[in-house]
Image (cartoon, rainbow, N blue to C red):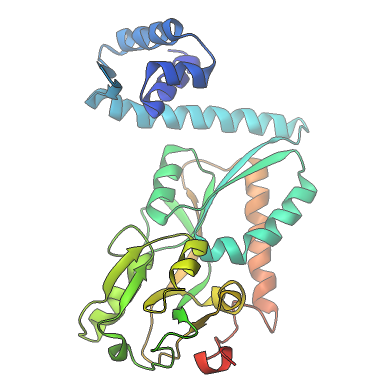
Length: 318
């Protein structure tokens, strides 16, 4: 079994067709077909099922794909690490970051990292927490910066707490409930829900309503993109629960305000997450170190967004 065979199989599995997989690998269709056939013969199982629309993974293929992705990822990391030990300052760092941490931490960290490693490519995935764990598990991501659910994280990952991700209810400055002080005042309102699941940090507003025995919020839209949320909240009938740290900067410039809610709102720890069984490459570890330093620096600033109190809606609206 050769690494190239695993890479051929991964390409076909991820693209869903022989033709697209061959194009991704820059080989001919017959060549990649033969490579996968030899792999199947060696494993004594069918990995792919051919259909008129392309290929689908067999149950053996689904199980093998996860292992193949890990092996290919570790091979890439090993190659990058050897190059870096030889003094070649190149490679790729792959990071997952949800909206709040991405806006708060990454710009300054990226600036410093790029000045030190101009030839290293940084890939940022702004997806959601469950997808980040899947990518970390598959070995296609070096680290993630994200809030984690109250129930914690699987033991296969290391989670380093960075700061507390306090929440606020956000609306357009002309929303009729912009001065509401109690969650019960918001019963019946429509919400933009962040996150793809009905639990965890993205759906924490549901937990806040449950804790007060209030009817659950009416979810009008689910969205994870900060820019799109800003646009959606221009509809002055919508509310959204967002990280406190976003409000004074990005959101205030979009005429959005934090409601002066006095009821307890959820808070989750934003953590640096990486696999426990696979060391990061040297350049990825250097990126993580710069990230930790940025959090430490911000935490000591008197006007830090990690410490700043959110102005009430009446104050922000002027």
